[in-house]
Amino acid sequence: MAEVREYSPGTPCWAELATPDLEASRAFYSELFGWAAYTISTDRFGDYEILALGDIQGPMVGGITELADESERPSWTCYFAVDDVDATVEAARSAGGQVYMEGTDMGDTGRTAMLAGPEGAEFSLWQAYEMAGAEAAGVPGTMCWVELACRDTEKALRFYNKIFGWEPVTRIYDHTAYTDWHLRGRPVCGMIHMGDRWPAHYPAHWIPHFAVADCDASAAKATALGAHIQLPPRDTDRGRFAMLTDPGGARLAILTPKE
Image 1 (cartoon, helix red, strand yellow):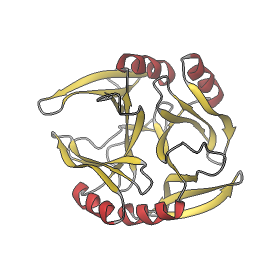
Image 2: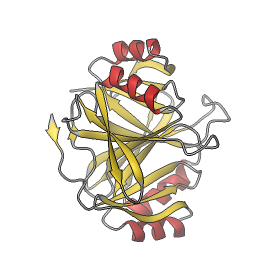
Image 3: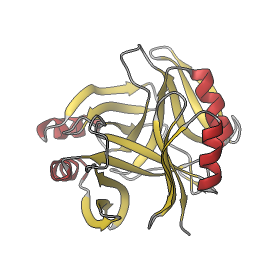
């Protein structure tokens, strides 16, 4: 397991689940990924649940919150590290993005903001103070990739290049255009074009991928635990992956990475 102490600006650093049922989500992800959950409390923002790998003494791998009301949809939010939240918010606004939450300090841990790209795919920023983000990588149960699914990929390319400096490397895979976004010469995340095979009602969205030792076995286990498999396990050039919605309705993917 690789211990992670810092994240370069423009790289994914955290994932947070918003769920209608905290207890049910804790049980599902404990069984699927071996996560434990514990609560931290702050005077200003109240309680926040941390997801840790293995047990509550293990490395932090994500967070979990309860939906504020029934108008919100269950979802995983991907966070990206930045040096300056407020400057990135302004860059996103000028590039045609939407600002859902301005830069806000989260106590001594860091500063965050919530944005959406041109088609409404939500994501968050993280400027680290005392907490860099997820503390582990490279083992099952950790986030190993994040991906944007959208229809207007040209607009997305311009938007994310302006705010994060990502450079696209696009190819055709399985008859679908797929883009690896590179930062300083290495891939940091991806984008898939939502073509005719996607349901018309599906909105653009970011989706986290979590590493598993055996994609097929994990997909079967997730189904037994109440998840819905949207794309069954299949081989890609990144590894074997499947896409699913958890019992609460949040989208995620599981991936057995290639060596």
